[in-house]
Length: 302
Image (cartoon, rainbow, N blue to C red):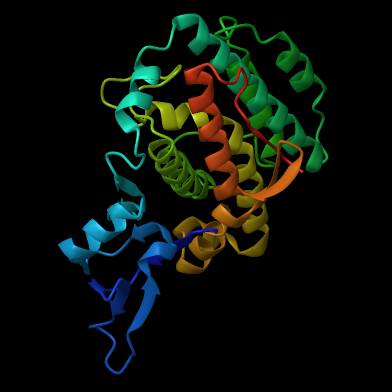
């Protein structure tokens, strides 16, 4: 079952009541309260300083493997609250991850980079752009990507994908549409982290990313092949709204970006919703750590 993504951009009081997430609207007199089964919730996005949430509800959401994403005054993600473990054999599985060999991690990163470049190539083709170089770079990626084909491909990809590429620079604090990309990537990161924990892994221990200040290195690794799916969604949203709305990242724009968990992708020769596909990806990664599989299941843009 696909889990719901709940976004709160207005003042709200959130509490648990009879295994339901109850939403009250103190700032809107006369507006009826709403309820959502807690078991149906996958991600909660808190994007207003006047949102109040009870400890009982937090505990219930965590017990149901939901992730809570908190946003700052600029409406960008500032924190992710999620279960410490959501797998009944968490300690055993964690040992496989922590004991993984460097050759295995390098091989997994090779697979990840190839899958990312292949999806970037498909994204360019869908937008009518030349992707011949991307296919060449993908074929040359070696274990651990020592030649940094990921970086070469990314530079070319962004120069082709964004039509205003004469001035566009991809970065967290750069000009639009970076704000839309950052917002959607934050949602994607929450989806990945939630699935990693559910599959018995620690999101802080990456296969490639290493940063003592980053508690989500593995999430940042595994989300790479999914990024082009986000990019295409952002381009579609840009075509739906005028510049003023996208620059301000209005609630209407966010609403369109929050369809991300339900975007259709192709994984292992079958169609799947992105959130479901992510669970298959992280489960396959765990099986690679355990020695049961040799390849991570990544999606292909269709």
